[in-house]
Length: 340
Ligand code: 5GP
Image (tube, rainbow, N blue to C red; front, top):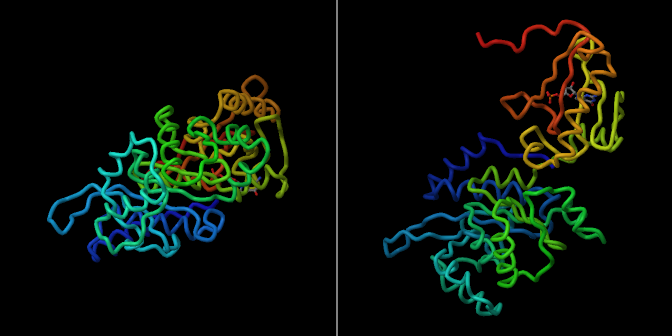
């Protein structure tokens, strides 16, 4: 999925909403909610919701901690601050130990704790958002996730694909019961940054809007190397095993210019180091050396080579799938261009 975050746009949102009297938190919540809502792969027919935990001043002049969560009747793609009603957070958190709450009582309690009673009804997933201790919580009914979860071996598949920062939650009807289930799952595994709810969708969370959004669209299935891995685009293959693929770069920068990539869906080295299994990490490092040997440029058979991985925008990464370049077959020159 394409990452549509832009720092320039984010600043524009902050400035625009500041003029209308809204906080930076609210401006960024509106921005990434729209990004998610405008992505048809993530949000179908109004499915999904988002929230931000922030502070607002009520008419009594007091500041209250609130959860601004999507209200019913609002489309994520066109959300405005009015579509994210503020519910007092303390009364929501006071129900953390409550065992049961009927849907009617839940709706009434949420309404009772609105800062502005004229607001739309807060989402049925309000308690779930409140119980996750992160500033930004994003929820979509991602097509890609549904594809994986709605199959017989859904759980096994999910674990394989999403690794250890994810907990997988069996289906529970949205409402207070689901919020309690999520609270239980999260308290057992507080290192997670993502929850996959079987036959329902995905929640990501972080203390900043960009990270939570990035987690949601972590991997762009349409990047060039993903297409090469699916054999939708040809490549001049050098080596392949269970975890690794290597092929020649289409625009060689040196006499020999190869690329080595993991087969798993990892955006860059940071993502790979955090989420890949030890087996995948070992396979990739060994794969680089195997390819160098095959190409006759490793120290034992040739004159040596350089390996390089560009990471993120400062690193100059163009293709958002982890790759190592291998340069050789001639002297490759200085390490890196110096700034003037
Ligand atoms: P980056 O700048 O992301 O580190 O490197 C991406 C590399 O992928 C570039 O060197 C570019 O030439 C190479 N590349 C881009 N598209 C293709 C393609 O379709 N096939 C192959 N083999 N290499 C590609």
